[in-house]
Image (cartoon, rainbow, N blue to C red; front, top):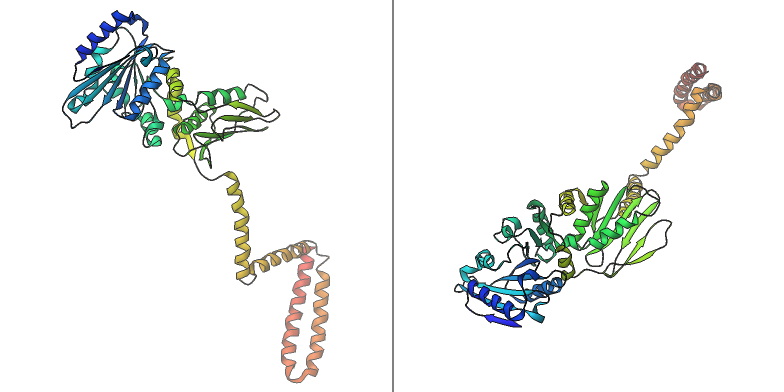
Length: 408
């Protein structure tokens, strides 16, 4: 049943609620909390109400929707009350605020809160930078946001980190529950080895991928690389390096995941992307601060971002060697000549260390000098050059023999 109350007040809405409870027999004690949904008036408002109705079947509550309308309109409050089949297991109150009243959502919510029950605030779309400082956030013990629904999810996640207050949580973190459970269970099987490094791939604007990488970095105390996946939605693949091999959990289609471990058969697990109503119902199960989520936010700075796979870095080394060979060829083979000189220098050094080998080159140099000397007497005009070369060879011969004696 849906009851419209146009241009009304909160006191009239409260009176109508009391009348409906008396007629229908529903009492306040049947509600365990008050869920306040803060959003702009539009098509997304009904999506948030439907998710709250589904979650209320597990957590009967009063749902108050603060739908902020046009700010330039005249101040006005249009209310709508939904009970019965149109409200799941809850009672839904939709408050459409216009004009200056759109900024006074907290004042309109306070008279409608259930007495002596916790208050949970939920921003299904855009949320304030610091939810705990928002007027409605100050009324709540638990504050739920969704970075994935923001215009810039990664920047919104950074705001969650800087503005975190105990009691805050985000549905991007709730979507990781199945991933965290599967990765944790993978280490229950032998071999129980330490992870040396990890890599998480997913969409570039997926805050859940960033949070999963941060959670691994904080828990495992190892370097974690966050890369963009070539295909797939949300989180696509997680690789954990161990001494015995790689533990990999992959979900390319967004529905079924595959867990691969060394020495274990490949396993297919259910990893379908979770809907908002399931994540909301999970968050309503606890109203105390989430310390694990807080630790994951603090570890966001430890995640290394990159787009280059390790194989690409190894492929660059042969390319550099090839470019060096091409440069040597362009320089006239100087690189090859330098290598040949170095190769020839090693046997010469070894011969100097063993003097028995250097005596033969010395004697050959003396005989060559004698032949050059005899040849110079017959050559005529070229005799002068022959004499000079013979003298140079004769001088070189004693030096070579001297080295040979010193080496021995």
